[in-house]
Amino acid sequence: MENVVEFRNYVKKFKSTKIGPINFEIKKGTTTAILGASGSGKSVVIKTIIGAISNFDGDVFVSGFSKKKRKAHLANKEISFYTQMDFSLYEMNVVTYLKNMCIVLGIDKKSINQKVDYWLDFFDLKKDAHKKIKNFSWGMQNRLSLILSLIKDTEIIILDEPGANLDSSWRNKMRNLLIDYKNRNRTVIITSHNIDEINDLIDFYVVLEKGKLVFKGTKLDLNMYAKYKMYFYERFDYESFQKFLSGKNIKAFKYDELENSIVFATNSTKEINWIFLYLIKETTPILNLIKLPVNMDSIYKALEDNNEYKKEIEDLATAPVDKKSKKLALKLEKKAQKEQKLLEAKEKAENLKEIKVEIKPENIEKETKKIVEPEKPIDEKKVETKLESSENDPKKIIESEKPTEDSKPISEEKESEKSI
Image (tube, rainbow, N blue to C red; front, side, top):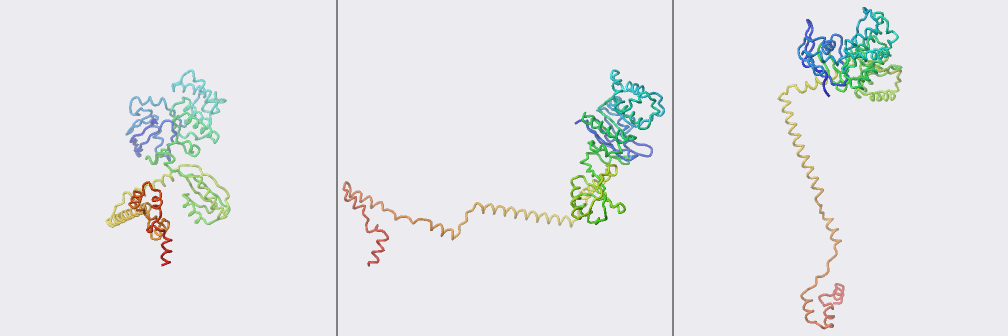
C-alpha cells in the first residue's frame, strides 16, 4: 500500500513555539485521525499538507510531490479541504456561489449543475438555494462549507472538525458519508473533538502534544480502553471490588461517594461479564451502566499507560550491573547448566530402560518350568552298524528295532531297582 502523505523530520518554527520534529506516513485508502489539544500543532500539520504553510524544515510529500518543489501545487488537484468558513459578508445566493466555485476548482462544466443539485439536496439546502448566504445560520453555513469541500470528489479528503455546529442527526449523516468514502477506498484525514462517533472508522492515529508527535499507529498499538460508569443502589466494599478489577485487567479510576458510582475502563467488553458475576456473588445490585465517550482524556490515559510500560522496559534494559549481581547471575547460570545436564542424563537412562529386557531369578524359574525335557539322543553309529548287519533280513531289522537294555524306559529301570 503506497503512502499518499509523508512527513520526514518536519520542523516549523514560530517566534515563541516550535512544532516538530514530526515523522509519519498516511497510507492510501485509510482513514487517519490527527488528534491533539488546542495548540498541539495539528492545524499546522493540516495547513502544511494543503500548501498553506510552505516555509519549514524537513520535507513533506503529498501524492509523490514534495511540498517544497515548484510542482507542489499539482498535489492539490487530488485534495479536498474542509474548514469552518464565515459567510456573513457574502451577498450572493448559494447556487451562484457554488457554481462559481466549481469553475475555480476546475470541475467539468457539463457536470456542475448535476453536482450542485446533488449536494444541496444531500445537505437539505435545496429549498434555500436562492437565499443570500449571509442570512444563513451557523449550522447552514457549516453544511455549505462541507458541500464546498466534497463537491470535487477527490482522492484525498481533509476534514477539520466536520461535526462542529451540527446536531446529532447531521453528524450521523456525516458518519455515513465517511463510511461511503471508506468503501470507495478514498483517503480521509480528519480532526475531531467528537472522536467517539467515528472511532470505529479510524484506521490510524497521529497524536500531537505541545508541538511534538507523541503517538502514531493503530488502535491496537494505542491499546485504548473503553470507559464505563456504573451506578449502585447502595454503598459497598469498594476496596475489595477494586482489587478484583485489577486482577481481571480492568482499570478502576475513581469512586464517587456522592453519586455512589465508579468509573472503570477495559479494552475488551467481554471483561464486563466478570464484573456482573462478581456483583451477583456479592449480592450488590446495579442501578445503571453508561458507556462514556472516547475523548482526548481516554487517549492520553492510554498513552500514559503505554509510556509507563515502555519506561519500565527501558529502565531494565539500561540498568547498570554491579559485581555482586553479575556474580550471582553467573552462579545461577552454572547451576542451570548443571541441572540441564542431569535432566538429559535422566532422559537417556529412561530411554535405555524401555529398550533393555529385565532378567530376574523368579522369571528364570517360571520359564524353565515351561521347557519340556528333551528325549535321549539317538546313537547314530549303533543304528548304522545294525542296518549293515541286517541287510535284506526283516527279522533282524525287527530285532534291531527292539529296545536294548541301554534304551529301557525310565519306568522299567525303576521297577528293576525295586525288585533288587
